[in-house]
Image 1 (spheres, helix red, strand yellow):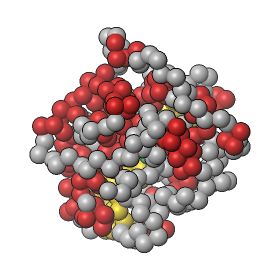
Image 2 (cartoon, rainbow, N blue to C red):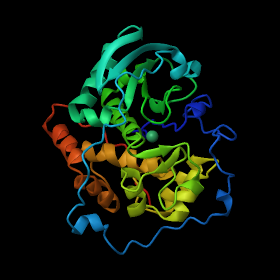
Image 3 (cartoon, helix red, strand yellow):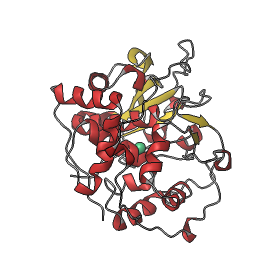
Image 4 (cartoon, rainbow, N blue to C red):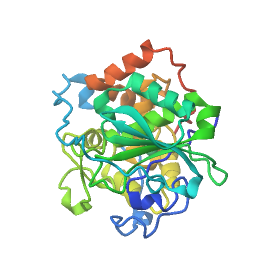
Length: 324
Ligand SMILES: [Zn+2]
């Protein structure tokens, strides 16, 4: 079984660079610092203690904040927000308050609608609030990208995002597509304004994790994830990498604490891969179990896993290759 064909893009500008390509996005991301990863030694950290969350009462999590959600805000229903370099865009749907709305471009694709409905069956509307467009494109002759998520061009930050999906692969392997779309949703809900302060440079973050797009907030999912599972050197190597794939391959080879090479490319990918495996309760290597269990401290994620267990959805194939 091939590795999941997944991708994330952190800036709309990067969209133009062609996601899924192994070409470095040199000079594309305006926030990228000089690439110095060659001098960074990657080491597997000592893990002698359990994450605190395993043994103590989970910290009280504030209710999902929706203060940033503006029902009047509209992302442009335009192929520019998908990028036609991957193939023709066949459909764009609006998403309002986390629910799939009308087709605003092209024609309905039932398999895409079904994939969204499967996502909606498992996830809370709050988790989907940042998604405002859902699109399908067709044709992947030059790469095997299955889906991506990115802020739309109108977005100030992560409050107006798009999830786009390749139609043929979604038809051919709907279970893999469901897993991948869930992965993409994780990128969206970890970068909404209650989670991330966009467009800041690393030196403006203080002690919180800078994820290429901005500074994560202290209580955000991603900041807590990085505090619990990533060393400073690993974060630096990932966020400064010119070639993320090689950083992921190197880290995966020496550290069994990752759900495959793709997860090891970047903390955000690690989070998204582990989150989707958690929700679908996929079997993972023992070294990764702490990461999977981590999500259980948040009632909103536990609710999603329970919804998956109670659904009729066939679990996606487990295509993660072990690290270490
Ligand atoms: Zn991703």
